Length: 526
Image (cartoon, rainbow, N blue to C red; front, top):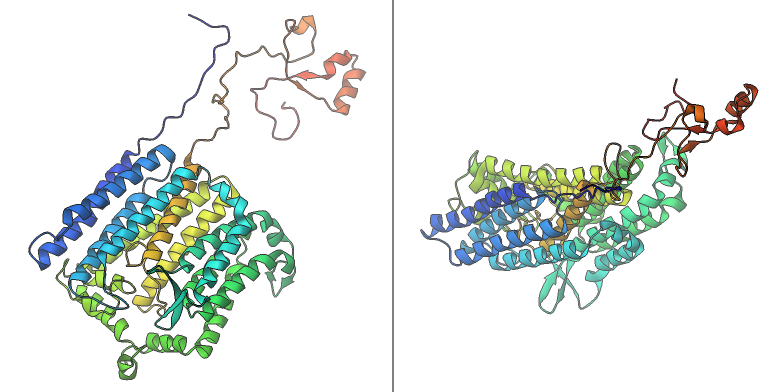
């Protein structure tokens, strides 16, 4: 049975996400296997609550996979398994430190960390379910700015802010402790992306040139510079210089991404060096951290309490004891490191998993960052490019700052390793970052609705119409009555030539074949 006007309805087949399922199985095996080996090594039996914890991790991974399959089917299939693997390894180490009595600001709490991770996953995939397009966030550019500033300033409010170890960066509400600056970095990333996508051309092209550096006009850079400076001043007042470094890096990286000017990197490094030297002179605890970094094995630095190098040296000893392959789960002594479950969990993992295990963890982080940057390169809108690039960079910078501080590449800053270290605020915030990266990657990898040459558009195919080349004369094949043919306007010179040659004025309009490619020179092909 034939039809006069057949139509073709193209349908894009949703990916089955089989690669993600396979990788999730491997990730769960790594996390659950570490949990089991800790109990068998220390107590000779599976840990208490092993099956319930394992089922919770598996259920979290399964629900996340289903949400992605139905609401973001084209999202990257590597990001979620990498996060599940890191989460499982972190929970195994925190539980290992908990049963060994590791303490610090508080005792190690694997159950509380598991609860925070589940809450973070629920929030992240609720966002994925409800947020169908990341570009919706662009409407709230300046709202995100106000939210970010409010979050940074919250710990300074009397009665809410809590000072711990000289830093006033926590708030305590109804018995729950929260670090709002972790969420402020997401709000500032949204603000920077929304502002820069509108003003990037002005920032890149307009402005004076000083000492070979192209600088933007102050009125163009003013709003973003004001927000950045206000947030840094507040964080310095709170003595949270680690988060200040993150915000500074986010600011410079997104400016460079928007303008493609290397002068921003040079200017940012210069300002960072000046700021670091100033902070070392103005704040005694910053100067003490630099002394600890430069001379950790001096007796005066090692024995000083508080603020000495004991924690750093114990971390170095633990990683040295781990060697290439580690002592094995439960066979080391990482509990001797102060704050081994939070600030120094990387050193604790180095003792029991060795250099090989640490390299595997860093490669897993590298996968997440690389996939985030790939989404930034692939997505077709400027806001998504800036947002994904900023979020991926700030995660990479945080990992570098933590690992660099523990391994003595840079001074310690007090930040935590994403998804691995104990910390409810860090887990919640980084799960939200992962949700945004997955949403942007889904938008980047989703097939375009616009048809390309050789493909059928979303509206279906129409029966082809006859096309002629030449004038509408019977001798050249006049089209049947009622047919409409595409026409190309002819220039005045061509029309004059036609008139000189004696051709009919109607022939001054040329009938062209729409399937033929246009001449790249702008004129007719020979």
